[in-house]
Length: 316
Image 1: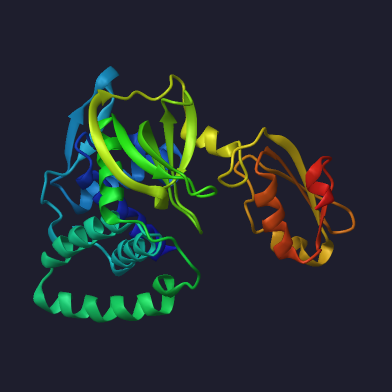
Image 2: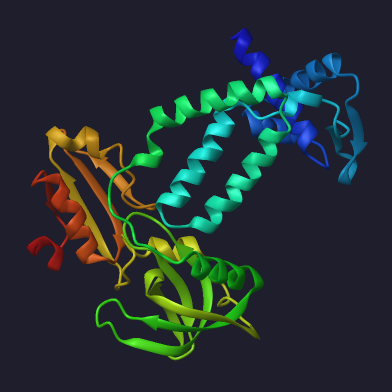
């Protein structure tokens, strides 16, 4: 418990250093899930150890505490776990074909490690290599699509700038090339297997998914694109089990007792509800489209799951 308390105080001190406005007692309560009295004791403990802590007034008479920039010196250097997480993100981005993000993260990590003393740089390099090899994230097997880096960088620029694009795109199913398609890009969706762009199509006057590997040319336009009013990406994604769009339906799966514990470790849908039955089986309920992707996924369970919901899915 003593070590845990020390770690909390160090983390609090770093949070006070990293905040321009400072932290209030209420901020400390939320960040550490403690009572107001405990939050006050934590602030006092930091103040006793670091008298440089500044108190500043905020709105409605609330007080905030912060450290002047540079007060904590090398205590601000990232830990090995934090650096490993950064390099893991690079590996994941590269594996999924997002080379622009991977390159940007690599530049950032190089700048961070350049600030270390020479002896720490050597230790970190050796420890990072061992930890990443043990993690194995860069070596996960499986196919992925090859997407031109310039396509990804242009799309990212369009999304950040909020402008329309003019694109030549080849449909995956038919192979037909559509030229000079005007799109309003919203987000790139990366994940296992295929990668997509979610965009508003001027021709279809609706949101559509476009396979990233199908883009052959993209040009930025001057016209500003604004997302549909009230659009929420997370809510939009929650309407489907995977990528494909369909009218949402009520889904109910029953995982048999011998796989119920394993199934309980999965989040099949962000709005799912689960129920344990008296025989030990697990029932999962949610509402989403994407029937074929559900069928592909359930096939992995080798007959250990029963589809209770009505509709085509139960006939697979």
